[in-house]
Structure formats: structure tokens, C-alpha cells
Amino acid sequence: MPPNITDPPIERDPEIVFNATEKSNQPPLPSSAAKDGYKLNIFQLSLNQLAHILIGMTVGVMLLFALRNGLPLGATPQHVILCVLGYHLLMAQAILSLSPHNGWSSRMKLVHRRRVHWILQVLGSGLALAGCFIKILDKDVHWDTLHGRFALVSMVFTSVSMVNGLASLYANELRGLRLPPSLSKLTHICFGIVGFAAASITLCYGLDKAQFRNWATDNFTTAIIIFVATFTTIIIVNPFITFFNKGRGLFRNN
Ligand code: HEM
Image (tube, rainbow, N blue to C red; front, side):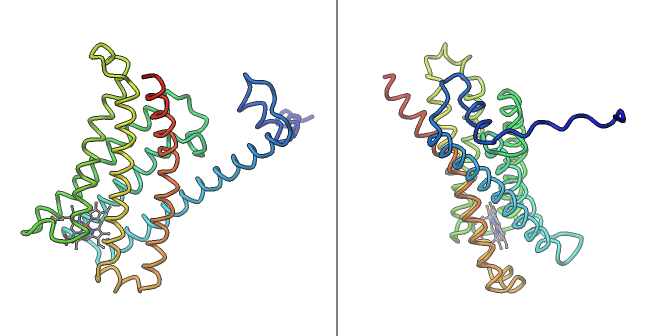
């Protein structure tokens, strides 16, 4: 056999592999339960893949829109680029990185996933807040539109979630202050979900502006709004479940 040819790996039934890897320290599931678990797993992996595709298309379209008049960029295109890259590329990936169904991070050790999460979170929040402040400085009257008001909500919750994230990162060290670690984690998840959802609503109001609609046409604008709503729902489902599970655990322990 030539040196670069090795025996092909033996194909194993994915249901058996799923049953063995996911529940390795428990007795094997009965076949029907394994089948359901396997199907749910494939469904969640597919949703995760769909979210990545929709994020890519949305961010791509927003970059094309912002760069349509070429350089130098005015305040609004700079604002759009920074907010969309910050919130809907980096922060979206930061949240997805902790999901067990996320393609690029699922094989990482938990400690590395957490590191990637906070690095993406800090970078994303930094870009997004910079984009918001560029537009705030460009305007004379503030918070007079729904776009601006939802942006304010997202800015506040994103900032609080960042501070709170630090408390979650050092949750064990903060035990001395008698703060239950799961409390800082719970509030971090909650503020993160609200901040990200508010950013997506802000983006939808941004897409609804005449300058975007005139460039993209009404039907295409509706399609992008549906993309944003779909990937936002997929992204926040997992933290939502974690939030309720941790919340139940906190109340049970008290
Ligand atoms: C996640 C995305 C976005 C965020 C977080 C965001 C945030 C903000 C903020 C903080 C302001 C200033 C509000 C004020 O001072 O009253 C603003 C204003 C503005 N943004 Fe955005 N924006 C986003 C996306 C967009 C998009 C996609 C467009 C254009 C298509 C856009 C166009 C504008 C315009 C024209 C204004 C000035 C008018 C107004 O306040 O409604 N933004 N945005």
C-alpha cells in the first residue's frame, strides 16, 4: 500500500455514535429515545448552520449598502458598518460560540470556548458602541425615532452585560463576596439576550429607512428583515434555555 494511503475509518451508525458520546457516563438510551435525541441534534445543527448563512447574507448586504458610494465614508455608512459588524457578526458569533451545536466551536474545550466568547464579546461591543457614538455625535436631537430608542436599549444592556460578564468570568473568585456565581451568570445571560434582541430590532428599523428601501427595493428589504428575525430567534434560543435551567437550579437550591 502506498505510504499516503491508510485504511478508511470504519463507518459507524451516527445514532449509535450520538448515543455513546452524548451519554457516555449513563446507560445507553433505549433505541427510540436515541433516535429522538439524534433527530433533535441534527435539527439543532441545521438551525445553527442556517443562522450562519443568514448572518453572512445580512452582513454582506449591509456592507454593500454602506460602501455603495465608495470612499471616503460619511458618518452614516461608518455607523452602519461598525454596528452591523459589532452586533450581528462578532456578538452573534460570541453568543453562538457557547452553543453545543455551533460548528466551529463545538470541538473546543469549555475553557477555550469561554475565552473565545469573551474576546468576541469585547471586540463586538467595542465596534458596536463606537458605531452608535459616531451617529450620536452626528445628530443634534436624540432618541426621537424608534430606531434610536431601541439602539439606546441595546447600548445600555450591552454595556451592563459586559461588566456583568466580567463578574461571571470571575464568579468563583467572587464567592467571598457571598454572591452566588449562578446569579451573576443569570443576569449576564439575561442582559445579553435583551441587548442582542434590541440590536436586531434597531437593525430592522434601520432597514426600514427610506435610504435602504430605495437602494434595496421593498421585497428585498422584507426578505432581509425576515433573515434578521430568523437568525436572532435561533441565536437567543440556546441562552434562553440555559437561563431557565440555571434559574430553576438557583431557586431549588434556596
Ligand atoms: C444594529 C444596527 C444599528 C444600531 C445599533 C444603530 C444605532 C443608532 C444610534 C445609537 C443612533 C443615534 C440615535 C439618536 O441619537 O437619536 C442611530 C441613528 C441613525 N441610524 Fe442607526 N443603528 C443601526 C443600524 C442602522 C442602519 C442599518 C441604518 C441605515 C440603513 C441606520 C441609519 C441611521 C440613521 C439615518 C440615523 C439617524 C436618524 C435616527 O436617529 O433614526 N442605522 N442609529
